[in-house]
Image (cartoon, rainbow over the protein chains, first blue to last red):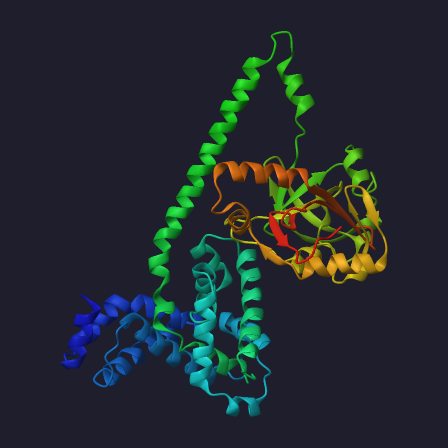
Length: 185
Length: 279
């Protein structure tokens, strides 16, 4: 079924659409969640919460890109779950991803309050727009999907070393770009 | 700002970036198959040329001896996603070129760094202690854990010709993190040891624009006619200098070429466009 039709059925409050969504995007959402929470069981719960969140949010929203819309929901739910349950015991791929991102920020909470998140998203979008497609894919795969370096290397057909080197450069570039744009992180 | 918040903010990027890979993948696969096809063609071309050379040899010449005399076989292994050349104690010429001893004693062998494999051999890579922990370009290779040969870094494996390492990253493999770590730089045999001059060259290389082969080809030859490309190739070759560096630890960095035309330094599949002329 086409995404446009699926969204239409959400708007018509047709509850069968959840099964259709799960069939089409279940694997996609499951992978994102697993990358973040690190457990299939917890990821399954997050994905179920995603269908509910989609059901509740759809009459207000009419997403043009359903896949990305669901991906954003499951990413949020999974990350909140991760923060809640892993405060003391951090591990898995997401912990490494976060440590890498720590290179781009100061770690100070007072700075956190001063940052306009919407403006920062625009800044990151501008940074991504300047990147060649292959580099952008590596960045998004790592810092949006929280994919492992090994999986990214396999997906992109390059070595793990190349992925690591590219990510290292992209983090530096992102930090420079945001600083140039006037963001104090 | 905390890293968790940055991860959350990245979650809000444009939808198009989240789903764009599916579109690109198709062209990526085409590029991959094109690269494989090109490799097959290259091998085929070498076989054809090889056959032609073999057939043109006078009948009184021993073909095996001819090829042995004119071809130097190089033993390569892969380790840490890079090619390393294996140099045994009998290859005195190469060892001398790299300031390395012909005999490796036990006190030179450090900890095991990983495993390496090549077409003809398989074994482990060990640290070469005289160059310290920061140098990964000169290591030791052993198939049996008893006898050792040198393993010299050649280049990282690039499966895509847009990939490159920055000059900083390349220097780091040789244990060089600052100009002070470089003892000398030679251009076509003319050796520079003046500290200020070395620092200027080092800084020019480190602040240069790094690129892979694809971008270099595009920058230099892109949009030019075949005649112009031919003329430029000749000019590049004629104005090219062989560069050799030696670190304060004694590590030799070889196989660098500096194209004065265009100011490009060619180093292990990478190209660096320097803002000023060096050497």
